[in-house]
Length: 222
Image 1 (cartoon, one colour):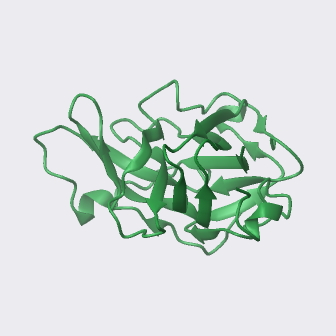
Image 2 (spheres, rainbow, N blue to C red; image 1 turned 180 degrees about the vertical axis):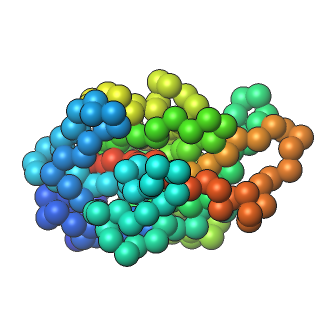
């Protein structure tokens, strides 16, 4: 099945905007995006634009959030509803970040969704920022938030935290029996806690201020 209109004509962000997507938090497009410590620039996979979800640069020397030059005046989205467990039973809890939703997606049996992504999270001690790819059957975004991969990337996993590498990552998802619903790509500040520790309360979550970034490009069904 083709991607839903009008995103079908903007799947490589060739319009330089988010036509066909719903955004939450700091989201903008750019011709290139810098890595920390002058490690280089990430260029689009195809064409002139890539999508930027949240902005690791938008903080002061103390790690507190400031305005993003790419989306001035836009506040982060609340991501406290998102969490996941690692194989050792520890849990990572979200605080704030950004996401984009692609609604009314149909992937037929035997088809695959492919997308390019890059997660950039400057090292932040005990915190564990993360990126998720989520699928909501029938478009019900109030349903349990089960990531397709748990998670797509996280700060504490060097292989998936690609902050000093200009190359893109690519993911392919072939849902068994097909899929109809909403897809979400999300990036969040987060903190990992032990299996027996209490979740962070609102005061603790407000300390998760240093943002990370998720880049997206070339979303296709094949």
